Amino acid sequence: MNTPTLETERLRLRKFTADDMEAIYQIYSDEVVNQFLPCFPLKSREEARAFFEKRYASKYALPQAYAYAVCLKRDNYPIGYLCVDMDEPHDLGYGLRKEFWHQGIMTEAGKAVIEQVKKDGIPYLTATHDRNNPRSGGVMKNIGMKYQYSYEEQWQPKDLCVTFRMYQINLDGQNDRVYRKYWDHAEIHFVEEDV
Image 1 (cartoon, one colour):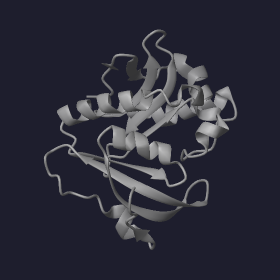
Image 2: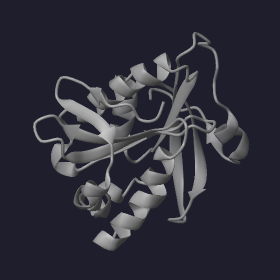
Image 3: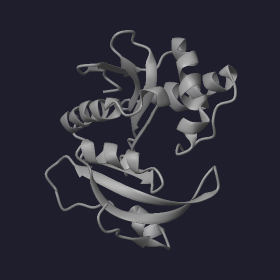
Image 4: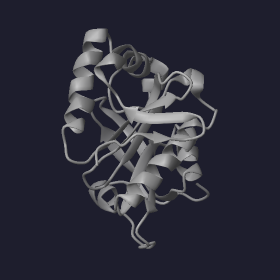
């Protein structure tokens, strides 16, 4: 099962295609959007094409992946992305063009993808956000994830010291499971109150 198309009330979640280079550029070149993303902003359409090949086309060649373009149904044009890493820790990542922030779009997309991966047997998902980006944590809470702990990491490739908050949702009934690798690898880790 590789990135099956999903539909919600407002959204179509589908694979990115070679026709989406301009949309990929718009999403990944914005410095405000990119501030809390793990990659540097794209500088050109040529970079967008190489990014598509590395980040998306390669995943679509695998037996199983979840690497979605988040589109409004009305025009099927990508305004964001949502991906689930197939490796442990099954990390959920997402981004959205800033003109679409604060409309519940990523919450709507996230709930649909969680339903799909649960049906496909993924046991749990994790997600992390920079403590300075609490609205991302709000999305995680809205889709049913629970805060577990915080940890510091020298974030690459941007080479920044970031305090991350780690959220998790268990999909297989093992409600006490906590993914601990980030905790175990970080010299500085702690549980924050009232997150």
